[in-house]
Image (cartoon, rainbow, N blue to C red; front, side, top):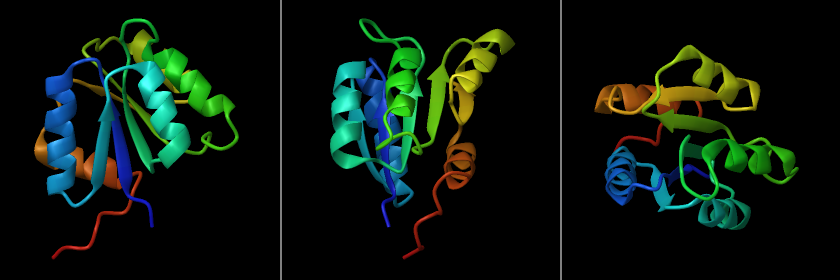
Length: 127
């Protein structure tokens, strides 16, 4: 079963940190620093979950989300939007456009991350 998660953010430190945490939890994790790179990886590897930054240069998260959801090959992949913006209108827009959830950066701790990811992908078996 595919338990790969793609982390997409223009902040390399955040990508590395989240990917490292996810791998520590037993998931396969990769990351992309741009929307275009994310779409390329999504089409090739079809991850089980995408954690997607809302605000990125050149191609923002909503544009990436739209591309993922409009492609029959990737439309079923759950996408969780990540952002530093915590207003309700931003969250509602992301959900209306097809995001499965909306997480505010800086408010996700290790246990919450594990719990939230498990809503979309079964946790890997413990060693």
